[in-house]
Image (cartoon, rainbow, N blue to C red; front, side):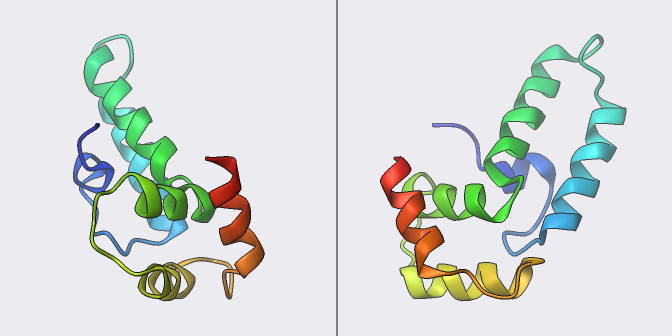
Length: 98
């Protein structure tokens, strides 16, 4: 299991889409793949886990190992996303994809 992607990016767990994207771009500039291939790979993997609402939801439900309820996760992510609400359909689709 990988390191906590929020810690890799240096962000709190309730960060929104834009904050995650901006931080990722800052780190990519700082740790170029040519000079820091291991660090870049870690940053890229962390960003892939958090890059949008659906991937964050999937990460928090199936990989984070946190003791969170689905309602709590949905509430947190829907408040911090550019989307207004997460539909049950998105949650079901996320579960079916794994």
